[in-house]
Image 1 (tube, helix red, strand yellow):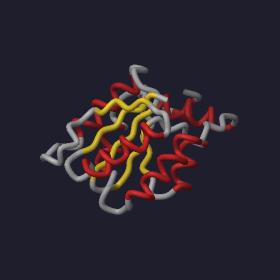
Image 2 (cartoon, rainbow, N blue to C red; image 1 turned 45 degrees about the horizontal axis):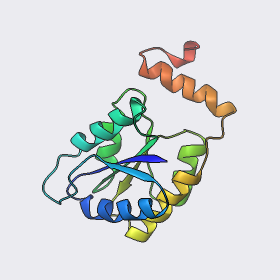
Image 3 (cartoon, rainbow, N blue to C red; image 1 turned 90 degrees about the vertical axis):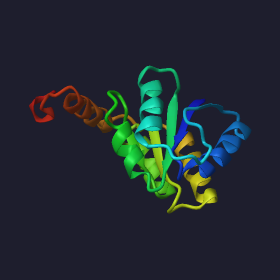
Length: 153
């Protein structure tokens, strides 16, 4: 899988380690931020990764900041992005099975590196369930396009 990765200064260290882990799993990794630890505003990598996902340049994206919240908010502003914040393997799994998330947002401050890797492994391995969830994704798309989902999109 071709994965885009971005982080701000608080997520840089975790992201650097995650690049190595993803590559060892056989994934291609496109890094969308410096990962130096120098100050970096989270909307910059969130937009870069989100835009690459939306354009189909990468299959999925992973964003890491202090809490994961800022990255998630910023990434979800990009049309076509379904970014999800996960703090455990279950939330990562459900974000895929029910919501078909295409960007995973993580907290560098609240999660240890091993848990980050377990969450990522679960998220990457989990397929979208489809079925009744397709209707809900269509309703999300309606909202994204400025339409009322209660009126059939």
